[in-house]
Each structure stands twice: as C-alpha cells, then as structure tokens.
Figure 1 (cartoon, rainbow, N blue to C red):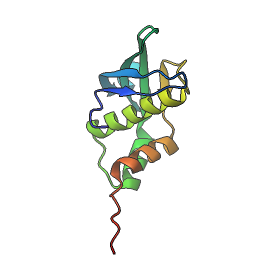
Figure 2 (figure 1 turned 180 degrees about the vertical axis):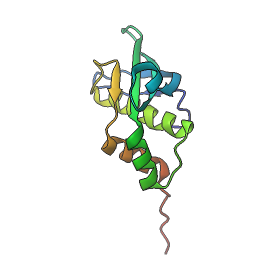
Figure 3 (figure 1 turned 120 degrees about the vertical axis):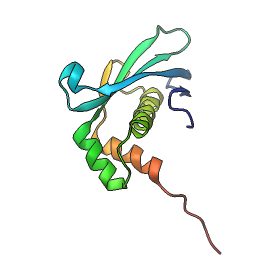
Figure 4 (figure 1 turned 90 degrees about the horizontal axis):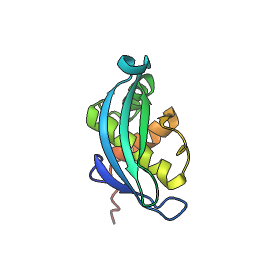
Length: 124
C-alpha cells in the first residue's frame, strides 16, 4: 500500500471492497486517559452506512516494537501500522462490530516487521 491516508481495502468475507479515509491521529491520554496513539478512520462500502473506526496503538508496545525492528517511532509509522490493521480487520471482518479497537503487541510486531523488512535478493 502506498497511501495510508486514503485507500481501498478488501475484499471482506462478503466480497465487498471498502474505502478507508484517515481522519486524525492523537495521543489518547488527552481524550480518554489511555497511554496510546489513537488513529481515526471513516470506512464505507456499498449498502452500508459510513462507519467510524479508531485504532488504538498502545504506547509501551509501540516503543518495544520499534526497538525490536530498529525503526524510530513517528507519526507516519503509526499511520502505516494502523492502516495495516484496518485493512486486516476488513479482510477478516474481525472486530468490525467495534468502534474502538486496540492492536496487540504481536500484531504490531507483525505489521512493523513487514514494513521494515529488507528485500532478500537471490544471488547465483
């Protein structure tokens, strides 16, 4: 995915493709007393009302994962991690009944590793 601010995700288990649009990112301490980064999206698809989804990235887990993959913690990196989680939610339909979804450390690590992996070249 090249654009994590506005993208298409899917298909979901029902064969639909969803439009995903980033709204904002902010520290959740100020809005809900949580040590996390909240990333808000609006998602839409044909035949469904627009839905609001907030992806919570726990700050302690973000720090640990960034250390593991040797990548600095930054707003663009958080946006990519949250975007990958929204795409996975749509494809699996897991947690689609929730407005606020917290990403687990293993999920964060998986997304971070896929973003930071260096391509392996085969030499002959």
